[in-house]
Image: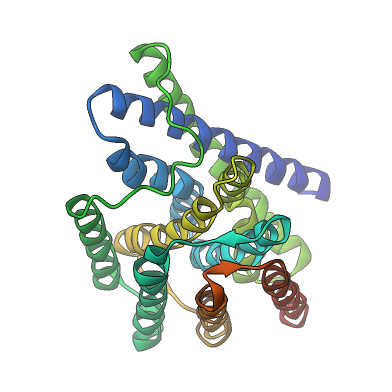
Length: 313
C-alpha cells in the first residue's frame, strides 16, 4: 500500500469517526430524553460514551486484528493528548476556570484511575481480563455514584436538543454506528500500514497518529464549550473523557482480550500520562484557573514528548 492510499485510509477513517460519534450522540441523546431520562443521566452515559466511542471502536478493532499495541497505545496516547494537547490549546485560546468540584472529585479520580491502570499493567506486564473487569466495575460504580449524588453532567457541550421524530433518532444512531465501524476499520488499516511502511512500532503509531485522530471529538467539544464561554465545561469534558478511556474503554477491551504491555509503555508512556495529569492538577490547584502560560507549558511538553518519539523509531 503506497503513501497516497495510507493517507486516504487515515483521513477517511478520521472523518467517519467524527461523523459517527457526532450522529450517535445526537440521536441517542434525543432518544434518551424523549424516553424520559434526565439530561444529567444522558450526559453521564450517552454523551460521555459518545465522545469516547472512537477510542473504543478503534481499540476494539485493533485487538480483533491482532494489533494489541495500537489498542493500548491509542488509550494512553489519547489521554496524554487530551490533557497536554487539547487542554493546552484550549487554555491558550482563553484561560480555563474550574469548579471546586473538579478539584475535589474529578481530577483526583482521574489521577487515581491512571495510577490504578498503571499498577495493574506493571504487576504482570499485562492487562488481563481480571484487570479489565476491575476497571469496568469501577466505571459502573462511578456512574452509580454520580446518579445518586445528582452529579451535573459537564460532558454535554455538544448539544442535547430533541430531533424532529423518533425515526430520525433511530436513523442517526444507526448511521453513527455504521460511521464508527467503517471509520475504525479504515483508520486501523491505515495505521497498521503506516507502521509497516515507516518502520516504527504499532505502539508508537497508536500513541501518536491514532491517539490524536480519536481525540477529535474531545477537541470539538472543548472548542464548542469555549465558543459558548463555558470554560469549566471544557475542563470537565477532558477529565471525563480520560476517565471513560481508562475505566470503560481500557476495562472493556482488556476484558474481551488481554493486552500485553511493552516495556516502553510501562516505563515511558504510562508515567508520562500520569505526569501530565499531575501537572494539570497542580496548575488548576494554584488559582482554580488554567492560565494561558500554563496551557502553553502543557503544549510545550507535549511537543517534547512527540519529539522523543523520534528516538524510538
